[in-house]
Amino acid sequence: MKNVVSTLLARGFIDQITSDELKKHVETPISVYVGFDPTADSLHLGNLVGIMALSWFEKFGHTPVAILGGATGRIGDPSGKSTERPLLDEKTLHYNVDRLRDFLQKILPSCKVLNNEDWLGKMSLIDFLRDVGKHFRVGPMLAKESVKTRIHSEEGMSFTEFSYQTLQGYDFYYLNLHHHVTLQMGGSDQWGNITAGIDFNRKLGGRPIYGLTFPLIVRSDGKKFGKSEEGAIWLSEDRLSPYQMYQYLFGIPDADVIRLLKMLSFLELSEIEKIEESMKSKEYLPNTAQKRLAEEVVLFVHGQKGLDAALRVTKGAAPGTETRLDGALLKELAKDMPGAILSYSEVMGQKLVDVLVKLSLSPSKSEASRLIKNGGAYLNNERIDDAALLLEEAHLIDGKYLVLSVGKKKRFLLTVLI
Image: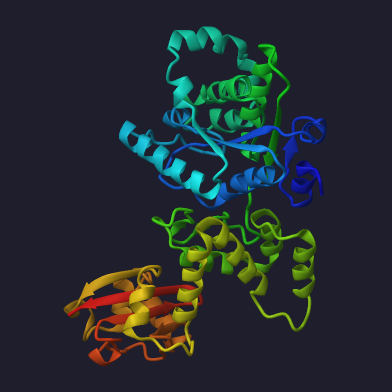
């Protein structure tokens, strides 16, 4: 396809657009932005949809712009939230902004990364109320979905949160005026903020600008996409190893994998259709599509080095694998595999079930025992069927390592200090 909007539509990116004129508007190069508030020092897998959208625009010759909310992050976007966000201190906020900037510039080298503190931080309260606030009407602001769902709740909504849409609305106007940005994209919960900016820009006589939202991804099993039992699936390698991201994507349900291949990979739609068709075949090997999804996403986020590490750990730590476990291999895996260090006395002579609980690999001894009896626990890639097993020196690999596997996906490297 020659039109980026048509491409995004075909791949399931588009939930709503503010004007049918957008498809024609993108026939010539434009600047397009997505905002990221620095609520943490890493983005998460849900943010990857916006990053992929920017990448598609870049592939079609447009200029991607990422806005970091150094100013709006002090307020907290109420969109999609049932309670008010905790406010971050200045030091944490600035640290988060720097980390997100580094990540975005790495994953999108040609992206222009800006911080809205650079313009919002220079405005006084009086100037903002006079020059910006007077153009926003309370009626339409109250009608925004992000406001309606909160204002009648038990907690309600503070004036601080209520004002958020005026700040984001001004961002869009400012970016159009100074950086020629004519399109803002965001999740479906951002519709109200985006349209507020378009309306504000119109009142000030700005050039036509547009909005596009993509659907928030919810898994077919009801779980929030990008969340695991341990928490968010972070994009920063400091927060989550490429191996852990790979394992999460490898475990995506069949009902979701094709949709995610369309949105989180650059595979041609014709190739994705072939994968979808192969899933109906009796010869189809389970998780083949998920493997391709995991490879594509980890490669995009962490590069070839990250993907190689994820594949290396996956092969070496797979329960029942024929890969020979030795100290050299495990020392290498320790860089990428979840793990912990315990003293000799905390492990040797202790029951395996007790160690699993100590490492939070099982919520209780009874659950650990049940897991072992059901064949779901492995020690050094060998299945364990004795719930009373005591860990001995003979179990140690190279005199210091134990590889513990719980269920199909959770692998853990325990280093024992002698």
